[in-house]
Amino acid sequence: MYFRRKRLPPLGSLTAFEAAARHESFTRAAEELHLTQAAISRKLKVLEDDLEVRLFERSNRRVRLTADGRQLLHAIAPALAQLANAAEQVRATGGGLRINIACDQSIAALWLAPRLEHFRDAHPEIAVRLTVSDDEAFCLSDSHDLAIIHGSGDWPGFDAERLFGERIFPVCAPTFLRDHGPVSSVGDLTHTTLIELEDDHWDWINWRVWLTEVGIDHPIEGARLQINNYPMVLDAARRGQGIALGWAHLVDDDLAAGTLVQAVDEEITTGAGYFVLTPRDRPTEPSARAFAKWVLGA
Image (tube, rainbow, N blue to C red):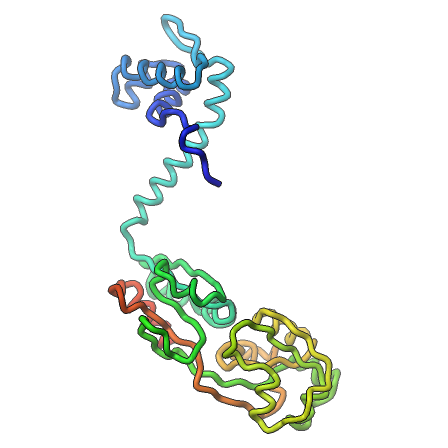
């Protein structure tokens, strides 16, 4: 939410008002803010003139808030506290090491997030900001120090190091095979329920391409469930709703845990994969170098 700048009262007067209201004394407010009593009075006069209301009832020994003054104090006291806390946070962390990482939803949810604690354990001095988006242009924008995305390895203006290649095979829940019977051959896949990733990225393999690559050229006759998010594709497979294409590394944790199994032995490999990208047009920060070294060895 944005404020309209012209509607703000004089900011320098607000701290003087808050202190005077809290102490019910211009003298004590002046002592707290290291100002003279006359300076406090001037600031409060400026504020009252700007708001066109009286904020204090003045007497010889003390001052009291008017109804308008109490309304203003109720609003600005927490706002000033939040500003003070935000400033302290920036002072505490602003000079420290930090890294802005971008990656797509699939590798973020299925591979990086479960392992990120190991990087933070190894480098507690580095603050990590992870941004997740399937928009490649956004991931490669100047707001990120490093990106991990899927592709062929060629991105103009970026140095790319392969994190892992692409090996793809069918996966499903053990309960799916129990309830629907084993898949005796790769050709049987065309007669069962297949979970399809409906993705805008042209270079992600779909069922038709995968089946053609393993020599199956007849139509898919079974039911298909289409989902436009790969982590949700795998979630549907875990729940026994069908057979999905599994990308090695992204499904490794599920295979190890037994929540997914490989439905048939056939698999394909491609020239694509996941890559760690750093921009060539600006120096790589030490925190980004540390993260790249860690993630490539993870």
